[in-house]
Every structure is written in structure tokens, then in C-alpha cells.
Image (cartoon, rainbow, N blue to C red; front, side, top):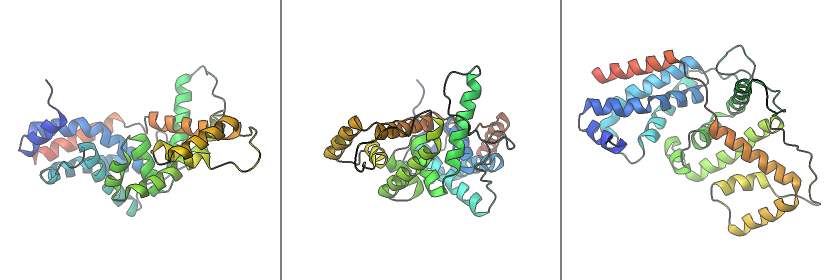
Length: 273
């Protein structure tokens, strides 16, 4: 039977280097992907991933396991990303894709009919998502990546960022709506549907809050009743729902085999020191 993560952690903290290697090697791809999403630049992401695993080896004895190993590693990685930002080395190119520094992000994705090259369509949509996320200010981009792309809970995001849960949720709602606004024209969902007479409620904010369990049952019931009669608001909610599905399923920037190899070598060096 394969040892659990907790068993590997316990053995590693007791001095078992093989357990430590297995534990961090299992999380190395996650760290590399997260660094790529946060840094937006391959060279910086490569450096952050290596520094994160080296720091994890050095600080493991102080890890109290009051969070998951992945959350702990996210926290370390984010601290190195912040240092990169402060040094002004991270290149933020909202108008380019990660894979090809000379290729513009797609802005012609309105037609979602089956295409002869489905892989190309997937790459174009992925580029559009990366473009939308990259355009967010760091404080909003961080929470969206951690919550909607990496799948951490709001409490885990708060722990990683060192902020309150309510601050995480407030930033998350704004980030979701900003990404939705950029992707909505590309999702082949009409935005000119008829609305009910009078002023519509803020259904997008309410829908995002509903996903976090933050609206009262009566508010939820009122929103559902409105959506049943207002095609425009229903379409807006559908576009937000689709946006979040795309964020969750996005593979993120590609991590090259050479980068993966460098990260593995950095881990091996740290383990032998």
C-alpha cells in the first residue's frame, strides 16, 4: 500500500530523505504550473519553482502541518513570485500568449461551432483565458488562480495570501466578473436578450456569492425567480458559469520538459546538501 501524504510528511520530518524526495517530487508539477500562472514569464516561473522546492527542503522541520502540503507550497511559491514582481523582472504581457512570445492572444473566438482543428480551438480558448487572467491586477489574479484554477478553498486561499476570508471573497467576486466581461463576447452567448421592465438586480455578483455560500435562502429564491422571467440576466449568469468552468478546466501555461528537468535537478541538489 502506498503511504499517504501525511505518512510521507511524518517520515520526512523524522529525517527520512527518501520520503521527503517522494513527497516533494509528487508536488513538483503543481508548483511548476502554479509558478507559470503567477509569474507570466517562463524564466521567472522556472526560477520560482526551483526556489520553492529548495526552500521547502530547508523549512520542512518548521512546517506544523496546520495546512495541506500543497497550500504550504503555494504560500512559499507566492512569496518568491512577489519578490520577482518587486524586482521588476516579471514580464506582464496581457497581449501575448505564454507559449509563444510573438503570438497575439486570440480575440476572434465568437464562433464555437465544431472546427476542423479542435486542438487549435482549445489552444485559442486557453490563450483567451490566459489573456483575461493576466490582465487582472495581482491582488485579484492571485485569488482567482488559487480559488478557481488551483481549487483551494476560500479559507486555504486566505491562509496562503495572509488575508481574511471575507477579503478573499470580495476580491474573488470582482476577479470573476472582470474575466467574465472579457470572455463573454467569445462564448457565443447573446448579450442583447430582452430584460424585464424596471431595474434588474446584480445577478452576477449574487451568483458568484451564491457559489461561495454567501447569500441567504430568500435572496437566492428571489434571484432564481427573477432569472426564470428575465432572459437577459439568465444569459449573463450562464456566461459567468461557463467562464468559471473554463477557468477550472484550463491547463494553464505549458511547462516545458526542460523546465521540469531543471526543477527536478534543483530538488535533487537541495536534498543532497
